[in-house]
Amino acid sequence: MSNACRRAARGKSKGALSLVAFRQLADRIPRDFRRTGCWNLIRAGVPEHVAMQITGHLTREVFLRYDIVDERDLNAAVERLAAYHATQRAASGARS
Image (cartoon, rainbow, N blue to C red):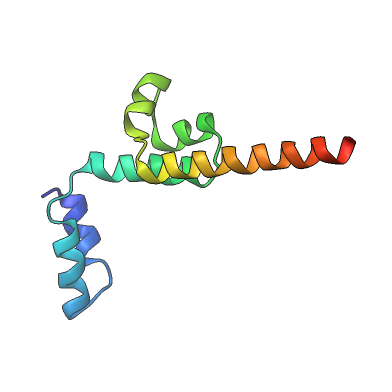
């Protein structure tokens, strides 16, 4: 485990809370945190070029390797598309 993970696990926590944090961080590597940071920045709506500056990525290609799409992303996209189509149908009906 990296020193950063050990320091994060120790933090200002005491006792059992510190042990829980340690167990959650024990199998992590720095790239895991970077990946989570990328994912959270993009899902929070931060523009990609800003997220890249925050995470230190120099190229979009490498940044996109960290921005992993999962099932939740796909479901959210389908829901947004359905909402868009519903809005378009409603607008078309209002014009008729």
